[in-house]
Image 1 (cartoon, rainbow, N blue to C red):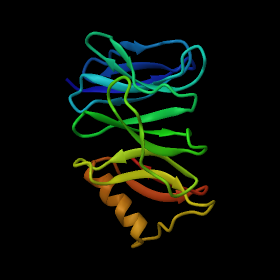
Image 2: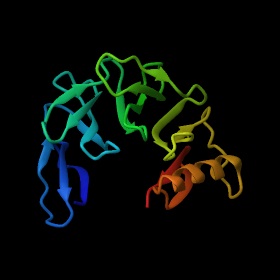
Image 3: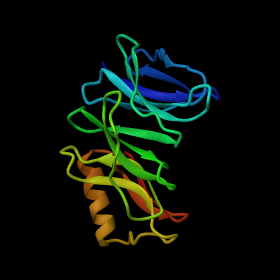
Image 4: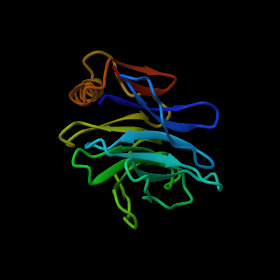
Length: 184
């Protein structure tokens, strides 16, 4: 069954749209932010960002069959944009817990401690992994200058290779000081 996860309307509710029928059952409409949903590799769970009544975004895992919700991060920082590792045992996410947006990895279970992955640049966000997990692509800003993404540049070639391997890239460009990877 083909499914697409969408966030829509001003209340930021999360739906799973069934492609064949067009039905879109709501799976999350909790108080506060409901966003950045990402399918687990086995398609049974969603990692997502929930803000709760405090408005502080953290990472959660929603089991779609049982509707059980598991909190993965619990930090006063903004934790968002979760992405599953290929083995389904950990998540990569964006957090500003170090003062600026950086990429972290955490086991997909409650009580785990995140490990910071990126240290260069003042802004690293929207992580995407190659299927084998050996390479990481992200939106980045390096000391208020645009990384070289001209044709043939090392950064452009590396980012394209990761994104193409993940089957998610149609276009790569730098704009407004950020490196953008656009999905196909």
